[in-house]
Length: 211
Ligand code: AMP
Image 1 (cartoon, protein in one colour):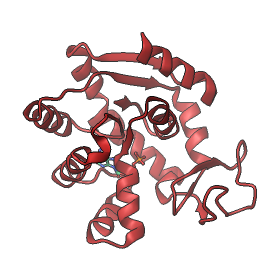
Image 2 (spheres, helix red, strand yellow):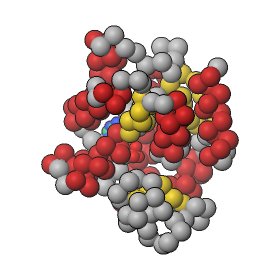
Image 3 (cartoon, protein in one colour):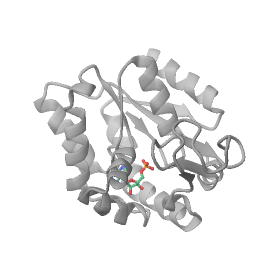
Image 4 (cartoon, protein in one colour):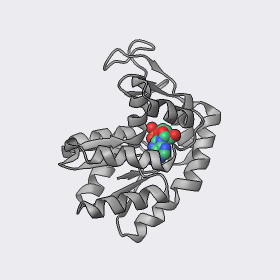
């Protein structure tokens, strides 16, 4: 599981780590945005919360993610990214995994200075179709507004606008940060410095998984 504030690099690192370990990457935000792109009712509901920088209600989120990790794609294991984000979600996850005879192996807590988070999120651009991530200044798409990977439309996420970023930080501090202690008490937490480059943080995460 990857735990950390918005902009810590959970998505980028989660995808890379999952590929390396040969397991699935389960990102609750991606699941909601996929539903949004498909125009489902769940997608519309999730969007109304996401656009405000608020959390999608627990009962909805828990159902979506538990269903996903029960999928055959996850049989060999998975990296959870962006879930759980509340104590209720963490407890529901523990309960479900317990019933399935499974458990979370490791929680990697990625720590990043708030100034750096604002810089990253403020310049972040995302592909509406495949969720590939770019940065306006450091790694823009080759053709402006077009995804290098799939040709989809690349733009700023509604919740990456400045006032929404502040709201997401507030939500993180109030609802998600308590999970650090929750998993520390379970003896599963490892802290990783997330301030470096993508490569440096990736290496630190791999070392934490190996050791
Ligand atoms: P992310 O892509 O992880 O930054 O998530 C984007 C948005 O999706 C969040 O700001 C929430 O509105 C929603 N979301 C993602 N994961 C969760 C979760 N575990 N619980 C509630 N809402 C979530």
